[in-house]
Image 1 (spheres, rainbow, N blue to C red):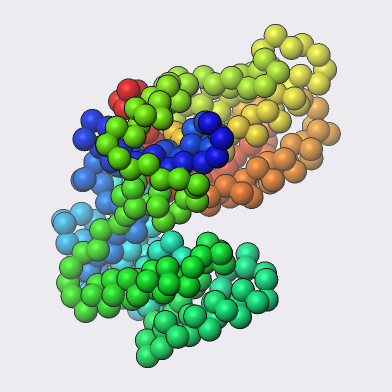
Image 2 (tube, rainbow, N blue to C red; image 1 turned 180 degrees about the vertical axis):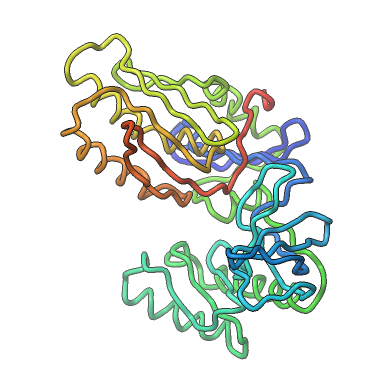
Length: 338
């Protein structure tokens, strides 16, 4: 099947979204346990106790959970503070939160604590920038909040952008003036907000209709095949994610570099679908040190277009390569969906 489609459905009572591109599973979102706060959730929290020497503060959240606010300068115990969940966390650990609140929509982001109007740097056309600036100024007239227009706004209909901004302003005003918690978006809302596709199929039975289960099957194994006969293993541990690359039957001098380049081309996709983040350690196949610069350039190119914020830490003394990836998702056990 040519083109792209967003498939929205429920699997075993869990909300699930899949992005298919030319018949291939490109991305997957699976709802987690309701006991785990979603990123984007906004709480009216109470400062609990400072973390001496760190400038951080432990926070008490309305649902009884504990939050960890890394930058808490000037905040005192007992003081109320609006915070937003930044990443997923394993049950039993403090929830990472920030005091920099964002209300994010498909075309815009409202910033209550950062006034001013800004456009995405990816919007380079001067006529488009002028049109969007005028639209933003009109939509934000009389508001003290700030606004960022996302790159998706460049080719969007003006009415759609205005509607998106109006909804974000309403959410921001309600959240800031009440004690209610604003829940973070689930898989369906995230997919419609962040994914671009030619079609959306949200009718009952969408997963079966697009045979998504068959596309998920390869992700049930820790092993996945690479081009040229190479293969790799990706295994999450409690501390970090390990990736091991193997050349397979190829024993030529260039086998290591070819296998490693194949892994780099596929790694972002594997991490997305499996929902893996945090610290990632790659044990590349043996290759000459002089070839590392070739691999470095390919790693930068591959993760430059990755939708998840990823820091390329680099090579270790033992010859491993390290990444630090934002935990926007929790690991997905694909077998549970089949």
